[in-house]
Length: 204
Ligand SMILES: [Zn+2]
Ligand SMILES: [Zn+2]
Ligand SMILES: [Zn+2]
Image (cartoon, rainbow, N blue to C red; front, side, top):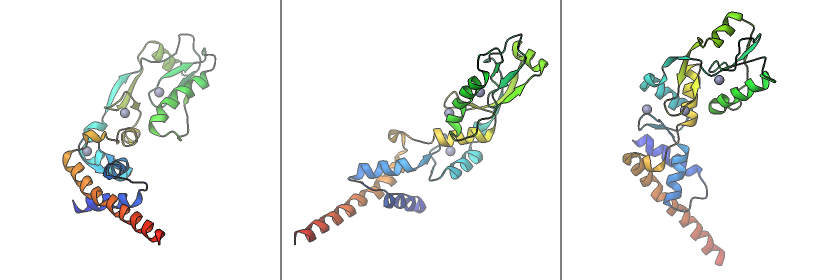
């Protein structure tokens, strides 16, 4: 409890342009990362990730999913495969590399927009036939909040802490909100006092 109050105070000291209690509260809320599975919150992504791994491991499980979304036809010789969901396009596509890059960018946007894009190129006839027959299966990690899917646990974890750690102020648990309000209440008064003092000094 005490260290949470310290955390809020530290955040409040670092914010500027706070005019009232509401501003101060929303400044604190903006800096916090909320666990989307419980009422815990953290100030940095590694702490949130550790918490999810430790307390919600069942939310990071993979499942076997059949790859139904692809553009691979019977007569393909080369296919370009997405490393995330195993979607594939073939060389009949007018520009297979830009198609696969466009597709992969949709994933990287939700994990890490700066990530390097790479994909697999295959001439494996058996694999191509498997795509055509709809028999490619894949272990995937699915986000429980949106439709995004990932090829590994770490990417799903990164995605959850990056995309789903904001909270709607209306959903903040009462106890947490009260604690933040208590810290925020003093804050604008201190600032206002400073402003007053300055203007009085100025009029002399
Ligand atoms: Zn949690
Ligand atoms: Zn994909
Ligand atoms: Zn998601």
